[in-house]
Image 1: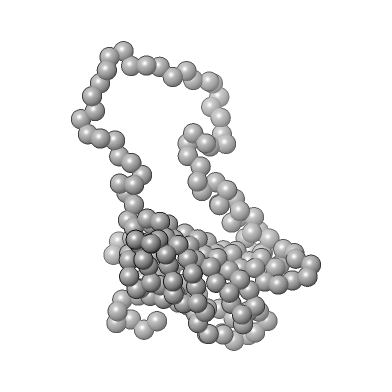
Image 2: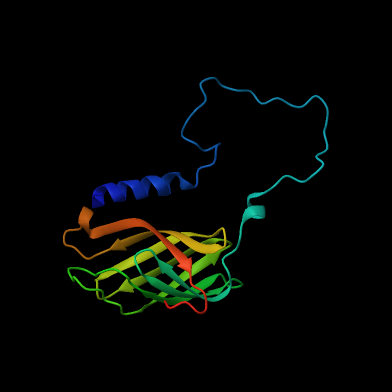
Length: 177
């Protein structure tokens, strides 16, 4: 997939990710008029809210590995809503054909199951952001993220911004990162 197509795909995902049914760009074929119930009803159970299904990002220190071998070591302070840690890339940087495994500090934020961090990869050189959600799939804890890496280029062009998905899986205490 070309870089331009990945960029367009990421923008479309981000642009539509937060839409609710009421905000959807599609419109009904015939207008509808809201109607009031003829008699009041009392619900037997409270309606479910979005917050009922949220599994918050685990607090404390944890290590995560992505499909490309990148490793993040995160410390989450859920009270303050902050994320600190390090990122070790599992991919070649810049024009290098070998990995540059130098860990880089990261700073971020967390709100419920939403998590984001930013960092600078001096060896690549680039700056990047990762934005996504914590989720549990079966017994596996995951961070399902979208990344954006901006590399210096003069003038800036399509090749100067890389985007894509990344899934980080939580490593157990005995696993080798």
